[in-house]
Image (cartoon, rainbow, N blue to C red; front, side, top):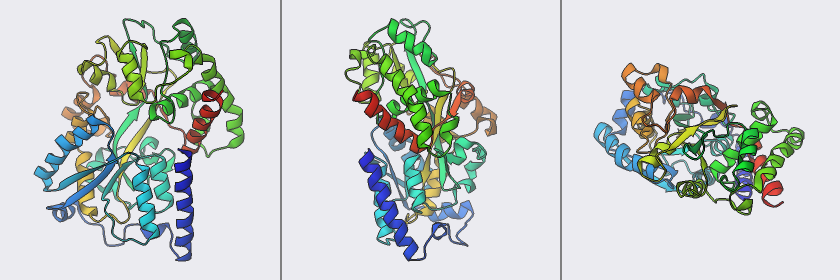
Length: 412
């Protein structure tokens, strides 16, 4: 992962020098004056066109949502042909755009990208994103743009260059027949692992869920998220990081396989839970437990719960590249994906099960009820999740945390 970060940083540095030499700057990628068009005109321009959506392709449920629901609906409603281009890593699309920007390629092949966090920030620093446009979509009226979890992406200002598509929130999952009182703080987790050796583990970073868990530990043992919303401070990290690495080293001997190895992914951890080898699992998708119950992969006694001191949440978005060839079509697609109908379908635990990006209070009453109370005994209400949210740390802190885990926990 560090090699990828360094490669991107190097490209950004070279590109910034090139832009400076040419007299360019961030304003050069803002939407040109006079390009603003009423949405009906965008819809008309998009008819009969193709929109290429580059997105992570490693989740079958997400792929099915796009292929089986979104693609035919867009064709029927807007006569837009959506093509999903799967990515192994969203950074691949960002690297491609960096290369095109450096080569002066004014028309690319990517119309829309699904991303957030580091990938958005890297592209924003290199002026890769078209905008502002996102707050002008008709369905943007359902978005709470005042919320820091919407208008800042892992601490980076969105400024209308991304359209919120969905939200994720970290949750814990337990088998209620085997675990009557699941651990809800880090102190309780320490005691629980000692009393139930071998029944808990977590995915090895850089797995996304594994990173989220060690970030939860960082918050839980160092006093919460506040210091990590500021720019990275080496002295603060040097002071705080031993507290979380010491905690993880302390519980390591009581983990599955005595901590000699870790599941390589959240999928592998879920398999251990489904097989009864561990009694707790975790997810950044609050609907995962119900989805797995419905598929027969988790026991019926599975339930979802939250850490008491707050659980991480973030928003994922859609961005239009600076050289996207079909910006009208991309905006039509993004607007549909934000529609109450599409968001309700996306939240179905039998499908993707992704949390809505919409503010439930702004929705029509009939839609509000469906999005507020997802079906199934293993789900939590939207209100309960919202009341427990804490923000992600800025990307620099996350990278430092991952490095500290590798050096002080994995290798020790």
